[in-house]
Length: 303
Image 1: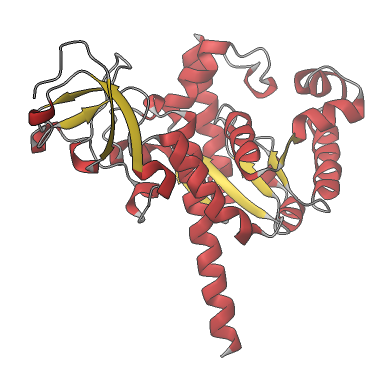
Image 2: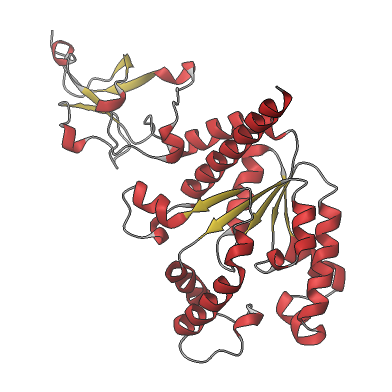
């Protein structure tokens, strides 16, 4: 018997993940099954690994207007939930990785503007870690408002010395996600301290970095002060030089998140279109890969 139009019925429905689509309206309703071309693209990296929805999410209760006799073969469309919800995947991946870390700190390295602070705060929250920024700690230690002021008043060498002191203290801690300064990788002693934890390189294409820095301005970037031209040109030129100088040092990181490759895998035209959650998930995946390799290496040596 056909339900009266507008009558809301509570239905408990198992969801076919390949037939599940998202609609901006936020209202649950039923539509005809979608074709292969319309299916959600497979999310990669974290999505390459098997991922099961928690049991409590495999069944959901929705309200909808429909015909009882036409429920078979129909697909749920809703704003509020879908099996590829990135926030849920981030939480799930964090729960997998956290026990394997054993409290080891995570050091995010990369060029200026690579998003270390943004990604660091997300990872700290999901892993129940504490977030810290090495530049901020140096500013507090010296009593200056910014790194740019420290460079101007005391010089880069003074800043680098303080940076190493701060890193040494952080290396004695547990349960921290640390956003490091772009140049922290140039001193070998700094790697000695970061080896107490896990280092992750956020490798961002130069074009995307230059766009980010140009959008917010270069005043807070002391190494860009002496360049000429537009904000983008100035940033791109200097970043190119810095990456050439530091590229091999960044490659020493335990794990690498290549935003260019990640964007391609997710079907995005530009790394700038990646969300912080996309990057955070990939960071956890790469950390997990590093930990698995380290465990395999340890096991092989014990045999």
